[in-house]
Image (cartoon, rainbow, N blue to C red; front, side, top):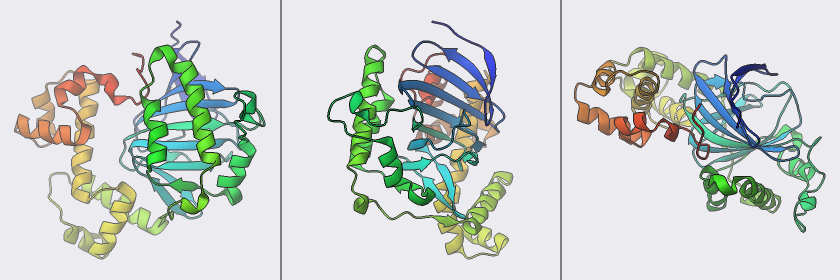
Length: 328
């Protein structure tokens, strides 16, 4: 097994190779406002699966200039935004989006600054015309999937469903010994599922105009500038000259939570970053975020992050969605 510590000048961003072996490569994407790690596994010629662990608000996720690739995105945690036609679609946990990459694709945006998810990428120029060459009776053509889901440069979004959850839940916990073959089986299952997906069953896509997105982002920035204040929605409405209803709907549409929940989540993710990057005590970190009671801080942290501060610090790899992510 070889581990590389080198920089690659990639098409859209600067990346450092943290780990590389015959089966996968781990990249750190630089030039962001936080931490972004991608773990990439080639599955078939022209088809790969990438696990994204993001603690940033924006990042150019593509590592090549190739346009026309079909990208299937699944959100496990956090939130990711897709701008299309002057509006934005937002993926919440469990949601699936299918897009065809443009050469001028904008950087991905993560409103909460926290995201874990998977992207399956298919390059039609390199992938087989039909996947039956890998498994008989798998009559799936990448070109047909592009025509089905991405006609007129559309962004297809379907909300969390039992079928989508079944396929992707197993991709987040694949034992190392069977990983290579298992990825092949699951990717074929996913593409068969999508080829048979009834378009009439897709939920209506709820997009938000840029004016609402900008309002929500202004409110979010104001909350982060005033973390010591207990701002009510009524006060925010007065501050930004908008109705409380518009503030609430815009904010929940962009961030997926109320302003109060957003502020608490930002504090806990900030605390998690310090637990990862420093050796400061838990009580010291708690005090920085306004908690003078260790038990109350631990409960708030567990509610947002899912584990206690001490458990999080002792098991940093739990912050990666890649299966059994290697230490880097």
